[in-house]
Image 1 (tube, rainbow, N blue to C red):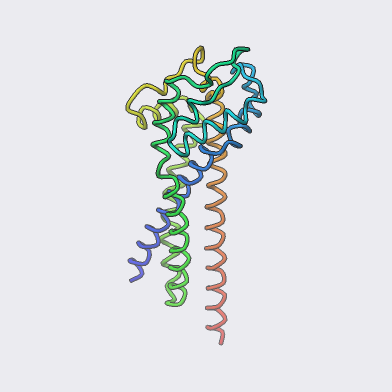
Image 2: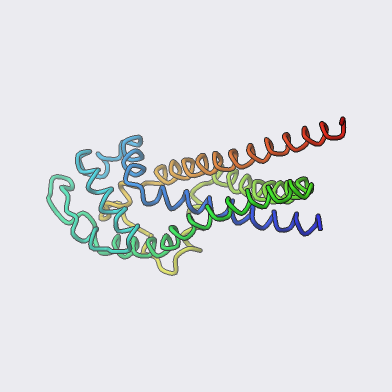
Length: 237
């Protein structure tokens, strides 16, 4: 029984951890504020050829298209680029964002699955406390957490040493075309979002996800402490 409980806990924990990472990724990828803060922090406007005042509408058109899959948000957007009023995004950029939007399409479902897994984890833990097998429930969650963290640490080290190669591999795996190979001379998108922009967003996603993991781990640790204390009191009686 304890082995089965541990396996169920591991499955629920794995789904929660993976889906919460996906949920945070979707959140930042469709957040106008995340784009604007990145552009402001990296001071990309000069190289991009647009004024900072253009940032809100550019970020909004981009994220609206990514969130809804409706590329008209980008097609209708105009901006002054290097002093010339023109369509903000060209067709290559728009087609690439359509591919990215397709990748983000499951994001709302992933967010709901994250919430459901958290609920299942809490209810499962409460059931195990009543059955005095909470230790097995915690063991399964800890095993999955350590395995996932080990994998992410390896990826993190890779990103710290050579982010460019990891970024390249991701695009080669994620996309079946070369539309993501944008040209800084012609494409505003790549001028607004250089490699440093993506590195910054990855760090934001990682920190937000780490906070989620810390809350889950802290709550589980607190519950374990309370359960052990109650057991000691009962044994003392």
